[in-house]
Image 1 (tube, rainbow, N blue to C red):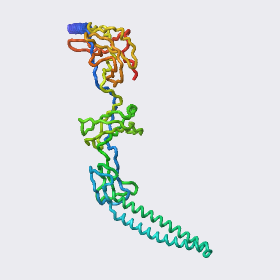
Image 2: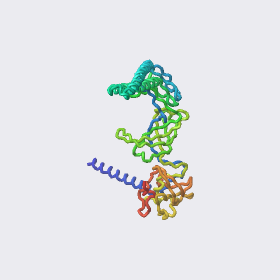
Image 3: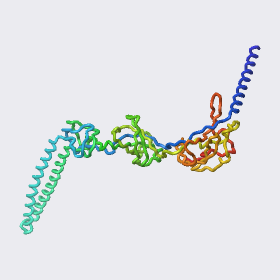
Image 4: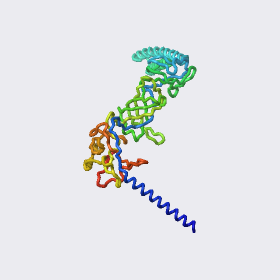
Length: 407
């Protein structure tokens, strides 16, 4: 019985303590006046960006191959070798090709002799046939032999040209000025060009002018256009920021793991030769940008100049001309509340521009350094409890400036 009474007593005491504490807290908070949070009108850059990854590549890159099969007898260049147009860079063994040329030459000479003989014989037979000395059959046989010898001679001439050309292909020359960035063969290696042209070297034209091939997601490609400014970084130089410009947005879509991307070409000047072919680039494309302009945080457009119910505001910060906050807003104009030197708030209609989801451009109506209200904070001896802008808003007050802004 005593134990039961003790439990009841302690329960009553606990309830009383909690009630008193709650009363003190709520009374204290309501008695504390609100202060206005402000932000300063700043000058800087506001931009919308698209991020992507890409690969650094030379603008002009040529794969040098061979059109004939054979053994690599000499290689005259190596990785990173600088070459000029027409420079001899490799040579195939010429023994077989020279033999083919000699054989074709002999075949052509034989065909020429046969052709010349049949041509003369045809001329004689034609003259005799016109005089009715030989039969039609003999003349037809002479004509047949002549036409056949002529065709064989023509064929042998073409075979000789082909053999001579193939011999010329045994020497491989650089087609452009540039740098050898890849060598796929060694001396003594056999290359076969039966079905496709094997690649021997890859030559980049000018490494001082590079490009980044970036894969832009389909959700972002609509805002990317030629001429937009680009910055990118590479892991090889994490502290360096490289700049470029979008030069081409390719229409061909690429699907990788059910993700659609579009190749975007970005020029990348490389005067100091830091950028190397194959580096991975982390790309930032500035799709919309305004530089060196005044801007404010977007939350300043949503400020409501009336404290929540049950809270008071410091007298010196009471809004002036509160009815003027009913000024009509539109797509390019909003109302903000500027804090004057004496601490009071006054409405100001401003002309706005683009925003990036965090800040918005202020084209007219404010000066750099002015303070604009962004919300209320309730003062406390222990904590500063921020009160959301929307809580307790008066139903007779206008909606937040910018609240109906169309994106």
